Length: 431
Image (cartoon, rainbow, N blue to C red; front, side):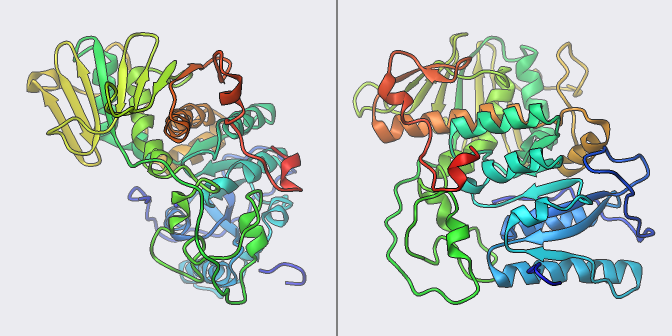
């Protein structure tokens, strides 16, 4: 191979299909995929969530996986073997066509790759996405879309500038119960929306983990990337092929905690139900232990959204209107009163929301059609911004007024300095 060496998610919508002839597309650099060609893909970040996504894409007859990338030698080689073994069995031949890389930039140089799947820790979402856009590739990027709001906006700008397709991995939008809930709310079945309750975890904190001895085979400097240099700890990057979701998401240098991890799912649904995919809240108020009992968001239309569940309704998202309530979670839908949703057929009312029955297939469909997918980069940007705004209010313990059009705090110069992070060279030159 010469110089090539060689995130709680669920992908229950993978399409399992039989063997088909192996065809590689004949294409020029950055040209769109021809109707009968395979969509060729590379994978950046090969942890637990990535393996699930890899299984979904491998089993789709439209896709040919050509490369994987990870900074951990064991994960890199394991997933290369997974791809090679899959195609060997599928095509009844000894296949060795999957390349493996330590540095994602080498993968992005490949002119024969149409699209990439990015499932790295959150602090590594923006930079590969922007460089992938410049390389003429479409992107499936895991949620939460970014580590900061300015990063998310830079990702939107790159996708639009280079005319790429990006699907954010907030895949609840491709589940029937969430579509039904949001369509009912948008069509006024619960009357005027007054409150929304979103039950997800809390904010992240600064990393305080002790130094541990690191086994050979991990490019730790590359794992950190734009994040500050610090000593290795296995909590952040467990060695080898593990089956859990590592706890880097609890630390501010790499993620936003439960607020962004699950918030990129449930706040995303709240935004969808409120019709705020191109906007967001205008005020964020942290709990003060007195009058304000929980983190509170306010929208210009008068809707108040709370971080935390409504008593008696469990996890998920609860929309409260003047005529009733709708509660939705994975595999759970509840309408009160029941007649709000009785005999309701999705797509039958005035407001018809985008329908996708498979998040991965929707991405592939849009790679061919050049249309925006159900969780387009702007959607991912706006939803993760809600999460980041909540974290900032928690971290700095003061109310904030937000301009969703300018993506700046109003009358608070200091708060605007909190929006982004300082990145290590050379990554600070990209975003």
